[in-house]
Length: 309
Image (cartoon, rainbow, N blue to C red; front, side):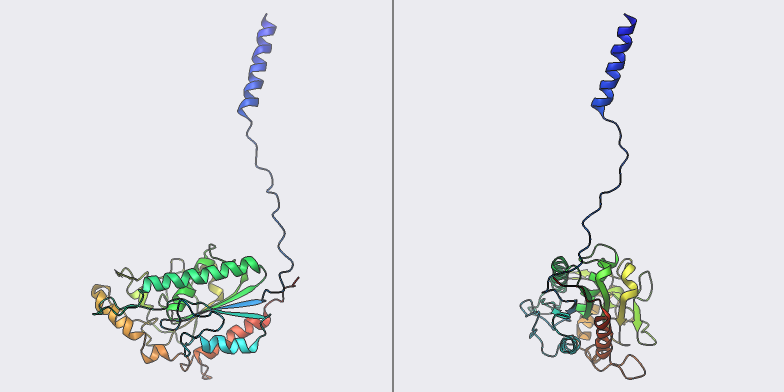
């Protein structure tokens, strides 16, 4: 009788273990698919993502033949690069977005899109085209450049990539240059390389006015974490006296939010901000746009030539 009882207990314990399940230590993760060794013949080796500034684009502009503003500063960068490289080596894509900045105190209203909506649209379109091109062409590398509002957008996308949650991997980014970045800061982590010596002592207008939030305009301050791990590949160009990226604290004050925003809007058309095609960044007389062209051309020239199938 005792033997039967012991046997019954053993059977119950075994059934308990079988039904409850045993904790399994995780085994090795099965390998994912191998990285591609070639890509479609239609894929470029490099894509230049060019993001124009305020009043230099439109939502309906042709990204491959932009006509919204024939004197857009970014055309003086993308044009020479397009002429220098064949299409199979370089795809030039100019982000089409509304590119406006309505004046919140204009009366009657100026009829423009708000800065928030404009920036949101530009960021979404930049992010979408990067993600789509990477999906179609996983071996294509990218150069990103933007001016003014376009620099804020380019910088925000680059910051996301540097934080590891961008639309493309950091490894596929050859470099980023932002010209007149409204979120420029000289302190904090993940700083870019400043082009021009000495760099301006001010900060971006969005940093000077951080926390200001009126209908359609949110000043978001510096980018948390800066450009993260992408920072060594990022350059910033800011002309001294350009209030968009070199705002002295006494000129833009969050306490006087509406007056400061009006001054900021006026500064978008001031000579310093409008003359990066003639502002020089070194003792050789190289202009900001020439420097950007030379920088991008060198990256494109030395970029890998992925096999095509």
